[in-house]
Length: 362
View 1 (spheres, rainbow, N blue to C red):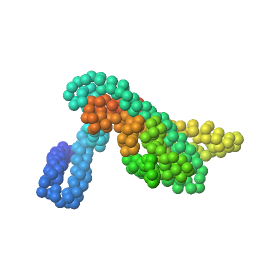
View 2 (view 1 turned 180 degrees about the vertical axis):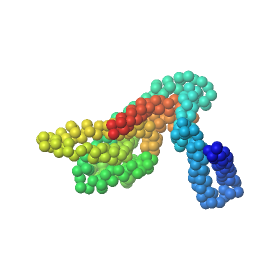
View 3 (view 1 turned 30 degrees about the vertical axis):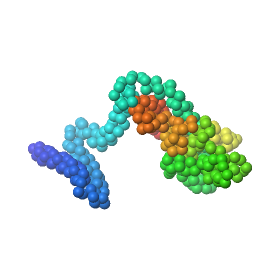
């Protein structure tokens, strides 16, 4: 009897809270869209912040109360849906639906109306510019990823043995705070080339160093094929700090007793490094490698800022941008996006499998 009474009171209360939450959400949204109030920018900004945070708080509170009143057999699942459901819905809306739309458009013409079947994919795998983009992405994947990981390991090992470990790691990690666009602008000044002429001073740092030693200034970003490696250096500069930090933490996790036992047995530093350190941190090396590999596959910002994809430096993501926003061919752009997604998925799946394997071992 008492339980039925409580339930009869609780249900109307929950209904009232749901209606109140809807009024708060819809009313606040309508108020923020009122033309006369939008002129007061500071007040509107504060009101939007309060409304946004308050709306989320009220929404979760009401949904949690509703889930708590459900039968015990489904209560835990309902609460999980309340807290994980919005995130899943956002992922579906922001990732899954655009992917499906891009897949549909990849079989359509330039305006997304005419069905062309596999013509766009034929373009993606036969066009000379696309083949050049695949080649350049392969260069980024091989040389960029390998350089980041190798330098990260070397710096992590050497820095751990230095008395100024924190300073060295801070300096190496500092470029991670710079955006890719900002890094491109910085390195564009480093590679700057004024050209041949009388009384023309070179402002590019690299050309200034070369001419100071009696060499000749060169347009580094205009040299076919090799200019890709000058761009890869920028990624190495940015990502080596990430690799160093992750690998350094893994190295510190190796028990010192193992290294001491190896030294007692007569192993030198190189033998310890290749026989103990590398095998012990191999799962971390694989994780860091696959993470940087994914970055090199979808690279866009550096190439776009530095060369715009010209002079033989084009990459897949930049060609997608050009096809969609410069040439206006949504079909070819969508096909390129799907190809890039298909290439990335196996690497991403392998990375996730490594994470799960490490979690099981722990």
